[in-house]
Length: 411
Image (tube, rainbow, N blue to C red; front, side, top):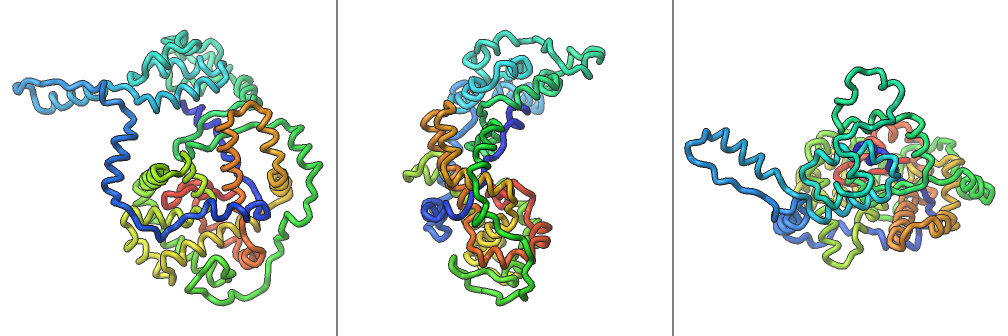
């Protein structure tokens, strides 16, 4: 199972020139009327439970049993549940798309999970792996005594190196970590990269990194999308990130849960399934503030960013503009080549003939459009950021992490 997760990677590079028509499509309104979150949370939990309660078991324990003994066995009985059909569907699709060579290293572990039904466990190739140790393992493990008694959970770690190398060259897609659950990984043939590079004039796409000698400029306490950021704004934003470290750590789980609640609420009101994730990719900072408002943590958050002279809306806007300008200022030649390939729809044309379904192609199109918004920064913002690249490098949260409940992707 660990290998299935580790095979996935975000495919998120783009340029602002391709983004302008989609800005509104991926916008996030942080000043909307917030619904009754408690009620939405109860409805969401009931609808999205990992377990189908129809299979739950309840024991009537006699009174003479020791209380601890009774509670322990009741817990064990309640845990004999089946996965919901939705969760099982995802596992089934994942296995169908995976190379069959992986089955001997995954199947034995699946057979140890009581929650799975015959639909998974009786799949051709999975059924035959029950209680079987993989025949082909890495050379360095072959001389270990009693290696065949290792836990099935570890079988994925003893795959031979040549098989791992072979699988990494295959072209197939698999589901990604639930936190990035709609993103997928595609491997592309080297010849395709050469084709894109050959067609790509780099002029007008890469931005120089020569640092400006300008002073920090005016600190803007009322910020709009059309207000150029200054060095003073950037330094204040970096200062707020330092102050928010503990707040993010303490509230991370709650804010991520709120993200799924917001996504579900938007889908109930007409949004495409999982489309809110693309909006988060395009505008992570507005998503962060929206998470905070929905989680009823506005007061605590405002106390922290207020030390740096921010209100919620101004912080979200300066954060967004700074992050996008930072990405643009970090562009290198290789990234610029890929960006131009996306601008000319080379990637979409490639995948149109690669066997992806209509739904997968539509999701990929949305993903690329959202990723384009990641770089939608005006030149004056990029110039303002350049003298502070080192400061931002030290203070921006960990790359490609969930920060304040939103995926913060920093290539």
